[in-house]
Image (cartoon, rainbow, N blue to C red; front, side, top):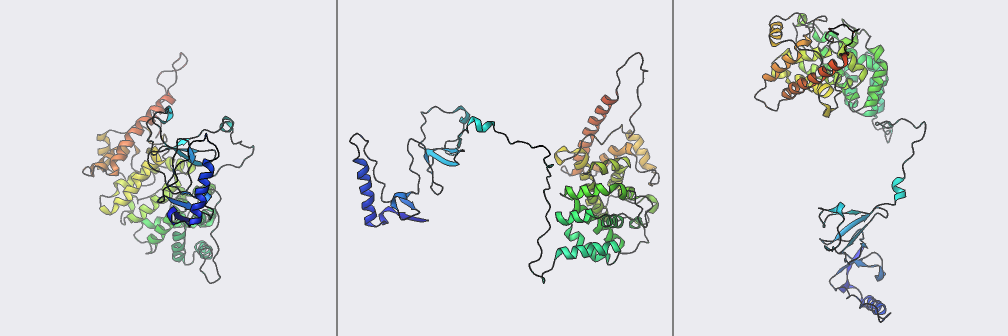
Length: 447
């Protein structure tokens, strides 16, 4: 694009422009007098050597709408509109005496854009929905990564396949876990991890072995468990297709008995802190945080979430909140609290409302008594579900000076949602009275 000033144009071009102006003015005696020639200081834009195709850099407005060139500058105060049929911007001198379109009332003239309505026929046209059309998938087609540009380049794909093979065979597990944890956040590789049943089984068994609660476990147990949990968490994060693959395997996977476990994998996954009988060694809080992260992704599945609730998963989260007042436990406790909010209590964060909490809570006196005389926390007697709210309030009280601490939001939404859920439950279980129905109705719904 070439930009010129008129005073810098060759004389022959200036003469030609004058002849064109005089010729137009002489075509008719009745024609209005020609507009004055542009000032010599007006900057023109010329894309070709033909002076007839030049136009001012600053748009010259009239009382009629004219097309604004893409590279023209618009003065302030014009009436501007966008023709949606042609896609071109148009402008003219703003006339305050013109009847104002009610739809444009209150808009600034300098910045308003008038949309030219399309034909009624075009407005009525709709995109047809064809029979047997494929189901929409928000993930779209997941493409494999591009191959390396040369044979000498390192390939994540080849390293990935090697790591999968090593992990399933139990050889050089630490190196394989390092590789998988680094690459599992990629949508493609996250999907490949969850598609393979033996890989899933190996990762879940490493992350949830009972050895993490034992004082005699090998030194590599905790680091391996943490990396396995983080790999699972990364694989399903923002990857709904990978989560669907885990759902396909879940029935078989949750019934697996891993080495060094005292229960099925479907229960071991949700056991986050050691029972009191194993308290000779307290679990690493960073490992607990990683395992909660893996659970958070899994609970986006309706299937897994329902199993989590039916096997006392919420009491397991509560155990994390009351496990310790040490500052090193704060990250894991925050993770447990945010899981509760994001999955069950806060609709703005995608929570599924109505599933939890439910049921009547025990009195403060009863909960305080249970806390003073705790029973051993084993598989049959976790922290009482009837005191969930009481424990949550006590936890928030420890942070009362921090007004924006997440625990206060947890207590607030917990109370609100329990009230709503219990009210809805009472409506669903109330039967209309009749002569054939005995009074008394049904008892309290089981937690």
